[in-house]
Image (cartoon, rainbow, N blue to C red; front, side, top):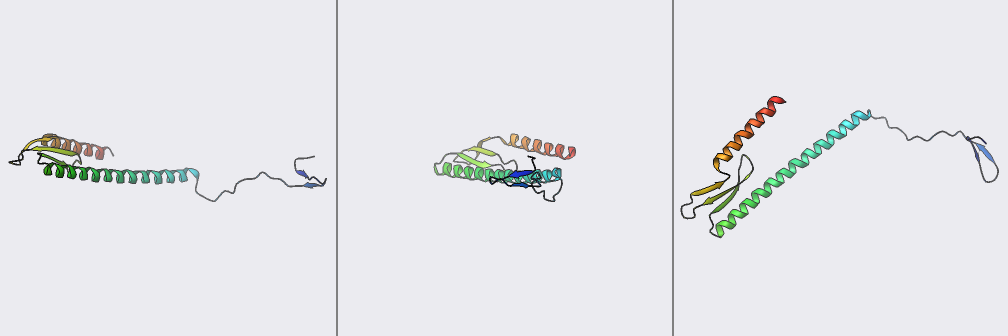
Length: 130
């Protein structure tokens, strides 16, 4: 018996034109282009998710700073919590409750200024390399 014939249980033999089964191939762009598009889509989605997460983290940080400052003012303690507008980092100030004078700030104003300048320089380096 050849591989192209089929034998049934009743003794009849049928000749079949058997061909290997293949999945239908849709007419699409080459695999490399499709993979590139999928990777680009994944990277775009990941960058959007990261931006949303960063924005959410900043909002949470600002809310926590506001809540802590409110709590300290109710307790009549000389602490103020805020988020630096340019660097988006937390800043804690120790103040004299009677005069409102800032006794100490962490990080201090000089450190914030230095961090801002370093951030500006790093941004320029990236722009010139690109």
